[in-house]
Length: 307
Image 1 (cartoon, rainbow, N blue to C red):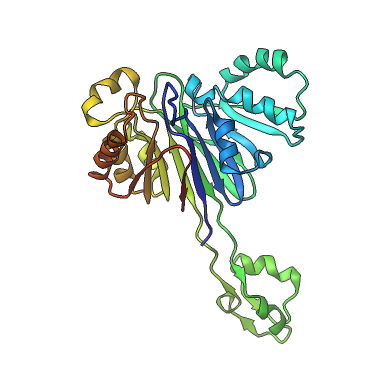
Image 2: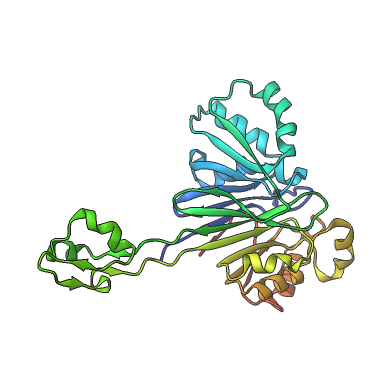
């Protein structure tokens, strides 16, 4: 089975703490790397992971609050100083273009690579990125500014050819695409060789949903239904539920309710309020989520989740 990987670079909200950076995450899927949000300190955390930033060609920004974007400028500047040549695309709400333009002109007029901002509409679910292996769609969320999550789905793979069968039946290369699509093979003598004798089923595809920042909203359930892994913000514990109306965030229990209703495989919670600084407080947040959805893990900075 293929392995996808989700790394929490920063699991905090609003103010960074000594051991908790602002929201930033790295998703590895189909051997590609995608950066999701880019809070303060993102590039420092990326160094800790040991991954090559040259492999990151797409950055997905959920919304334009500072704790999700204040790491963008330093990261872009560093990439240029290192002589990056590959193009980089940032997928974000259209206002980022206006915000970034003067900063680019002042600090990065001589970028070593092409930087593109792809304006997205966070208010509707639509495909915003697609390559030969992965499709990324937006998930409209409920927050104080235009915000969306992101749904990553691997594309269906063709069936795998049993190599020894190629020589056994003298199968030409031109027939392989058809076999991968499920076709049978007909020999020169007219014998029909069933596809199931020549191929095996492909490895299951993976899916991942990122939902932060957001108040509780069941409107996302149908969009994320059945995903392998859901990352959902859990800014508050039950005792501070009164804060969610003003801040438009979620409790851990609410995140778990969404995971349960959507029938996801695993829930990862994060984006904790800076008011929770003790280990036992994070354990409480996790336990409240697990009361509703047992397969819940609480992210911390540099946590790695494989699926």
